[in-house]
Length: 128
Ligand SMILES: [Zn+2]
Image (cartoon, rainbow, N blue to C red; front, side):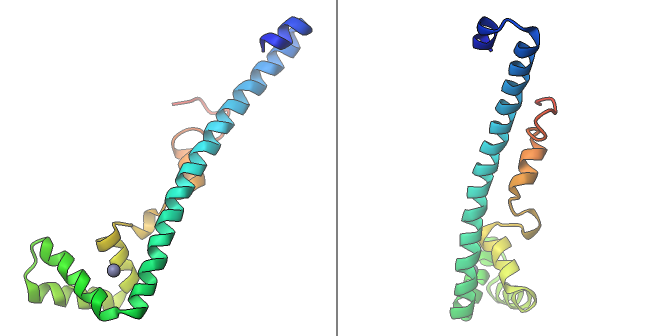
């Protein structure tokens, strides 16, 4: 901005340079947020991929694993196995994602949404 002011001296040029600087700044913040959430999402997708393969390859081990998780939370052994079996019968990947990985299917990281929610998009919106 200072460079433009010194070279041309036109008020319009200074204003344009200033606005361009603001827009570029908030866009780069939005891009940064997008990248950080994207890598979180990539990690989640890798976990889901691995879990899918484990479920396909060793369903019994996965069932035991799930039952162990419920026992650690205070559920009695037999009941824990029953709960693991019944939840797995319905949606095996979903229950492992939630109870083993702590991933809520409904709130999987959405990069663009994150940039909007934290107020960095669109760039002309006031910063929080
Ligand atoms: Zn599992």
